[in-house]
Length: 246
Image 1 (cartoon, rainbow, N blue to C red):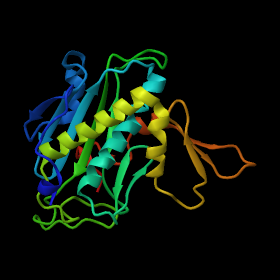
Image 2: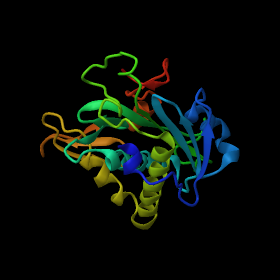
Image 3: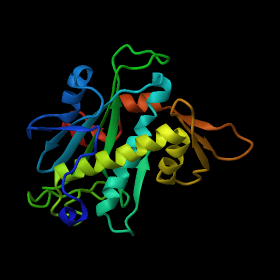
Image 4: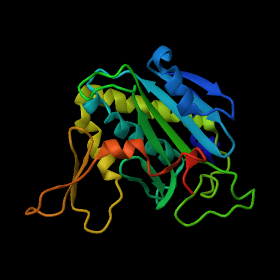
């Protein structure tokens, strides 16, 4: 059970949590408050069917490099889910920020920065936000297709948004410390190890600006999947419903 898997909701040092009302949107509020809230401000919603939180960051690198913090956030999100996951259930990413549990979409991450910030400018702030579809579907008699799932459908009936969010914060701080000590080379391989493997996946790497590079053979140039366009319209996110697609 999720309540047994997690420690009590203890947020790490340098993180200031703000619990929001169930009707609030953590990502929107984090973006609105980011300029004055400061680094480490973590906004989260204790909603019944959806885990929803957003973390304010203050990078020291230009935007073209700093946006790769998305991959650290995804690593932390997957590690948080792994705390409660049976070991035989795979946790994977669809590039760049869709989170898959046992092959089905369960949530994802988003990243945003101040409007007008140039690629070579150091952004005043970044916001990493995440959503996990948690539960409530079965109780309402709503069926989900095979390509989407929830914590509830996977048997984690006692999930607690505050504990999940606190666990994410702890995992993210580990990622941040690793980045500070070793640079992105400590983040990228862990992300790539969880990237879903399609047919003829080839060798994959992350470019300096966060684009995914796929080398299918030694004779052909690498295929490039741009990060920037995928951040502006995350494939996993339904903007109309303000929740993961499905």
